[in-house]
Length: 204
Image (cartoon, rainbow, N blue to C red; front, side, top):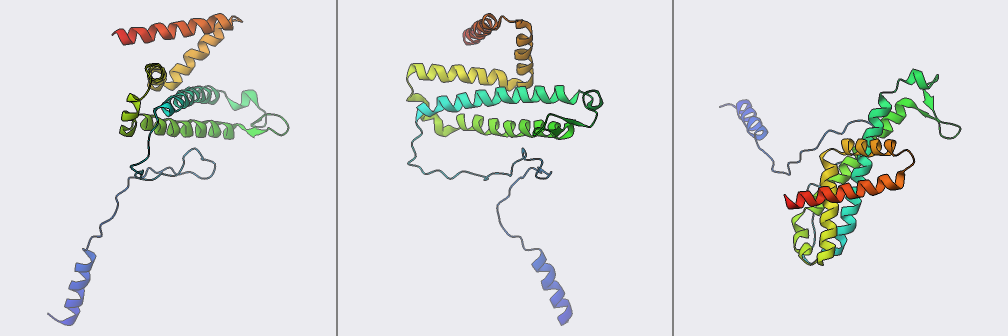
């Protein structure tokens, strides 16, 4: 084998060498600075000190944050779908809406609503995974019966909204449209209906 052949053989062998490393599946979020709702990918794993104590009393505010964010997600999705069905030419001669200091292009409003939806979707996914993470399980047992029941109630609301945030929001909006000034009475009816449905789920 001549020297040129040996050099070529070494080059081919070197090309076959594999380097070990972390394999990460990163979603292509694309877009530019106008698509701020598509945030950068976070760490592939968490590094938490073993001595950190997860206090059960912090589950309730986490659950309430999740419920509120999911409700917001549903209403944003409802707003986006309603707004995108409006033909720009029928509401604006110049493609803009708003008044002095608050003028926006209709296309930008659509984009902003979609950004809000994407951001809330990512936030709720993260909080939901956090609440259901194994490191909270021992802490749950440390809660008082009342605290535990309150968290369970909130998480039942969460599961209800999470099935379809937009459908949940549209139902809420439909009920508000039907109130006709009797908001207090309608609000009480919603609370009662929610508790009845919750009780039926527990019995079943």
